[in-house]
Length: 167
Image 1 (tube, rainbow, N blue to C red):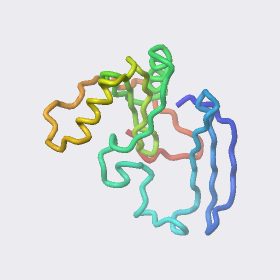
Image 2: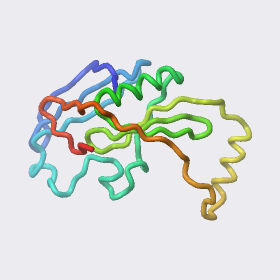
Image 3: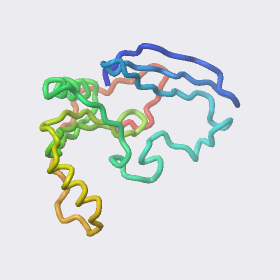
Image 4: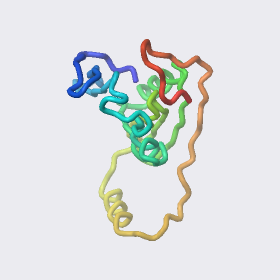
């Protein structure tokens, strides 16, 4: 994602195995923390019963639960999108009418998103959202159209880590 690694903690896990807890600055002082679990399989985790992906690991489509990060605008968005492509990640892009988004899968199979606002939201948007919230009839509008860019670069492999979702 291009975030700056700012802190890390490496400890033994309470019931066996060990962990790395890594903290990244998202650019505005906010931290995004990730766990790297090691040696917990067969001790605290049943290897065939746990999945790292927050959607497909639960049997849901990958796009249901995902993590979105906001860009300052189109220029930063294009830089983030290109970073993914340069590092071997395929990218899907969608214009959602009020935000523009690009998506890829992280090494654990989680759908991640960079997005930026294309217009301000107002009272009309809120009124439309309230109607949608109360309306339980099936949707009649098709899914958003988008584009897919396949990376030509070789995917970066991190030392000591086998990608769980190599696609």
